[in-house]
Image (cartoon, rainbow, N blue to C red; front, side):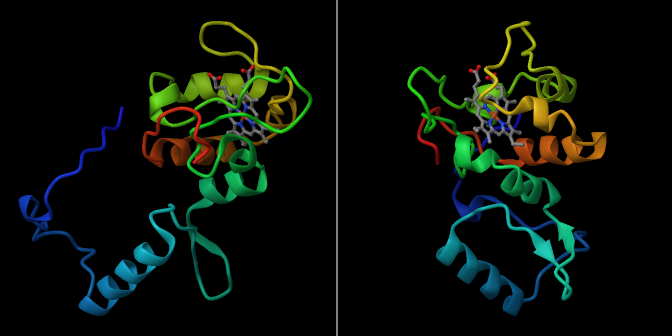
Length: 154
Ligand code: HEC
């Protein structure tokens, strides 16, 4: 499980052997992007718009996960007929103890690790048709999202 902690910037040091260091100009661009958009797991594309990194987030966008579970996947009330369950918290604060196999089973068979079924409003029957590769990318994306308390849909 990933834990997030806020620490003073002076308490961490760059790894001198890190091959992927950034120039001051790149750092200025990253800082400008963070202050404009906040931290949102960006999708990196090449000049043709082909994804270099962020496929899981892309899939989550086009499959509508963010629409029901919220931009930050914390879950919360969904729009629809009364009586629908709220969308679950998909951050590690919600399904942190799930394995990838648990996730794949939920997406393919609509069952949680404890055996309970997911309401069909969660379109698992459709998502179950995703390839192993797509579900793997989605899983990695879910694990990259910071833990958030349930229900704010942020
Ligand atoms: C139309 C709304 C909707 C969309 C779109 C949607 N979900 Fe859900 N999801 C729900 C609801 C509602 C629940 C809660 C179901 C329940 O409690 O029975 C849920 C539950 C889940 C669960 C089970 C977690 C748990 O323990 O309750 C997982 C995993 C999940 N969704 C993943 C996803 C992923 C990944 C996507 C995008 C590929 C997605 N969902 C898109 C509405 C949605």
